[in-house]
Length: 198
Ligand code: GRF
Image (tube, rainbow, N blue to C red; front, top):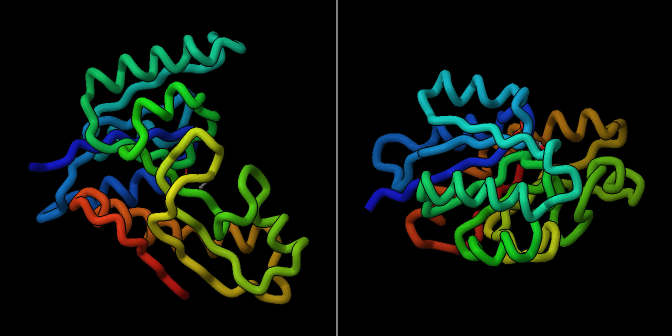
């Protein structure tokens, strides 16, 4: 049976577009919802252009009330009935109560070779550490931030003249290759990690 995929974004949504465009033909999944916590996220218009239903749940009116925000999120997701949730540049930290509801069904992409550099500023941290390789990771979402079983990694070489910006720019196309490759496998019930080396 075709799997239903909801994609959660906060910004430009380039990973969302890569995921959505990959779900065609004999792919075992289809996008059913793109949801943003920012009503102004550029990715929402891109999703509409791809004929995917969209929804914005602004987190700001909820202030510190994470449970309230997540209740609204949960209600929208229950209506869309996704089998799989893909976090794609979704910049809200989710509570353990929320992640528990979707454990085993929720994926995230993170711009580092996890377990290195959980959290923010991954490119700067890789350069400061003198790393010769950098990359991105798709993993299952668990209660701990940027943790959870690794489902795939794409790796690239760091160049002597790299800056955080050049690393980010070179990494993005790798994210766009890795995430759809992992989703295809995951939707088919295969959790064998996808490893890309560029
Ligand atoms: C990506 O680099 C992702 O790894 C990071 O935020 C960026 C999202 O970009 N967490 P986009 O919204 O998919 O274009």
